[in-house]
Image (cartoon, rainbow over all chains, first blue to last red; front, side, top):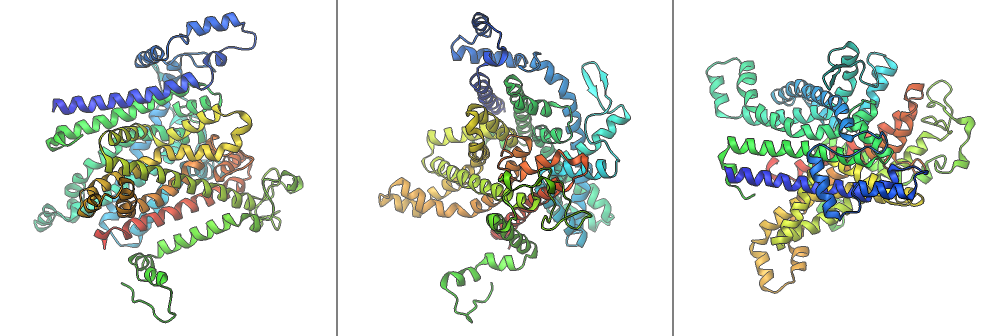
Length: 323
Length: 313
């Protein structure tokens, strides 16, 4: 078990180092950092001083080492555009993204699981087939198209929900939350729905497949034979056995959803990390781009590693497999 | 299996197709049939854009400002021949969609071809040669997949645009997009082919070929590759839809095709600016076209996966 643990964590560390190398290459070689930071009036002497101060005259390896050490301490340098520490900017935007992704995840479970159960139990009926086709629709509709259509229908035409921004937020320490105000909650509706749609179809398809599998098993037949009511068999016996893979997938998708949120955030002008990243791209604000890449990849890799380890704890057979 | 039709004495190839399991399955899936027909129509219309469109949307001289912001013909003030209305520059939406679809489809096909070629070569090399080649290729793949696809594509696209001189940027936009999409797409093909190649490597026919001193390149190409194509075909179909989707997303976010040569994503990006001013048709029709395109590809891919899976028969 210990060997597996060490191996898996070592693997994750190597991947993270590779990602950091990519971020560093972007940071160091896409445009000259000094040129990005100075204006036309800066003298050559000041430029040289800044170059020395940033450590850009050291060897590439020393610079990379410094980049990794600083990144591990949460220091990603100064944003070219805002002249503020990148870590501060990200910390400001992080709560918005996390709340959005969290609500979208909860929505996807609340809607996806019942839909999956219904399509599995009533297989072949017209509404089940319609839902089944709807799930292909959910995978095919581009996320930004869904967002635009939601805005057009519910904001522009019907005027039911706000189309952009986060509404009023309440600050609790460094965290800012939109859950506690009416406008904050209203602003969450459309973005989270648009982010959740893809996830809903994933959950629905997975639950359906798992349910079909489970309903064929012996313990279900025994429960039926014992005279347990059908509804109770479906929800208490069968569904419970389907939830494990659903939870795994939801966890693994969480990192993906954070990355995906950047599209939703752009459509709805939601002030999260993704919008910060897209603005950074427009202004070639390299430190912010590099930081975002590192943070999202870190969340992604950390969750995947955690899931693998959890599985190994539960199922000893996995510990001795090849990799 | 369908009976072989002998009435019209079809050519051998045609008879083989009519007799195939694929055709048999297609005939029994109306949804896949409809999707296939829709896809064929959309693709043909896109490639015939110069013939079908009433104006060349790239030619600014052909645009007439007094025809700007016309709604679709069925609405009040709508004007023939501007079937789906015009945008603020007087550009016919229908023409823009036809040309835009062509850009989207070409980039989609090119991305699939590029990632397919790279993935097949990498997968065969990793699976057949093994050793450090296998290790290196698979670790590179691991790293690429540990960054979310969409983030990877945006970064690559943004970085390339920054590196290129300004005057080359727009011209190279399709190439940049193809690279950005293929960079993480090849890994899936490589993994699939690798796994299959490792299985095939141990089989007798490959050993026989090896004993006959057939060169490794030839063994990989003509002996192993054909036996790995079925799952690859399914993956390629679904990836075609994904490629169109990623291209559209990048263009929508402003790191894809420029407004001078808009793809469907660029058109939606432009139309999105008029969302609140009432000209809904500028954004809605390109969005519908994009959705139909991806939907038809995905339905076909779904069907193909089931049809080629012998366990489901």
